[in-house]
Length: 347
Image 1 (cartoon, rainbow, N blue to C red):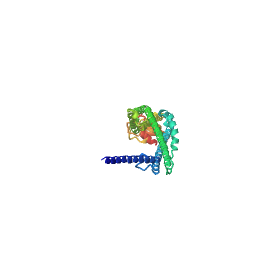
Image 2 (image 1 turned 180 degrees about the vertical axis):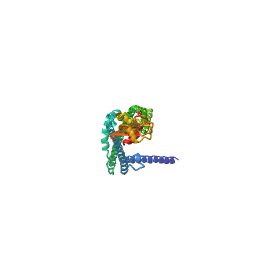
Image 3 (image 1 turned 120 degrees about the vertical axis):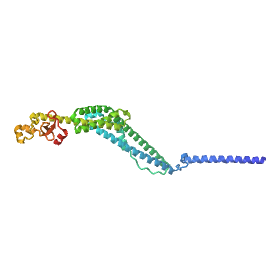
Image 4 (image 1 turned 180 degrees about the horizontal axis):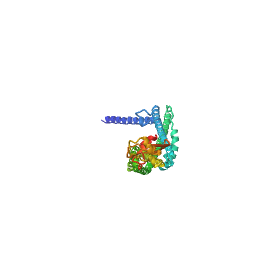
């Protein structure tokens, strides 16, 4: 029994020695493998080899270069939009420029940012991916990939800052300008409605509802939290309301001037030239009428039926640089003529 026990003890000791030797071999082998570029994350991929490292580094650089190309394109697009806004602002009349404010490119922050972003976007170029066959090649390519990725990230961040600045400025300017535009629209619409003959004319019936619609759309936006309003929509709505009010004001002023010109033209003629036809004899021939009326009255006499409801008036037509004759209803007390008819005669 003692001999059997000794045999078991020797066997057990041999097993421990063998196990220890195996552990030592694994540790030493693993250490040597690590020294040659191995890593725990590469045990199942084979990426610890030079070929694996090169493939990984090349992929990283390719992706970084694409990110840089995309970032440069986005930056150039944003810069183009900033330049376009600045060009539009530079063409505004002085009074409009004071009301609407400068473009973002003309602000201190915008000027500084664009001065930095423009050369960065222009210099964001890529080069062909170099060949790779060794670990040192892979390390160099990986380092370059990190640099390109950082360049792309900086470019994207600057572009985002530019767009945020442009957007915020548009929103702020629209919010500041909106009350003035609403006030102007209200005043112009009030004037148009107060001018009955204009409000009922073909042009008035078209322009007035359009301007009212634009004004109401702007007022609806201002009644919400403007901080949450889309800046482009806000700016566009303000411009639409402003342009509508401007067009209505210009057309109404032109209409009033035309009416004033008519009154001036008629007043320069004698009342006899624009007098009612007081003849009640429908059968009176032209010769008898010539004898009964003065030459000036003949040129202006109405050919309306007896009763004198229509009057033939003389008005100055700017397009023809002379007087034209037209008929107006309701007699001398209403010297304004049908605008559309008069316009057709002038055209």
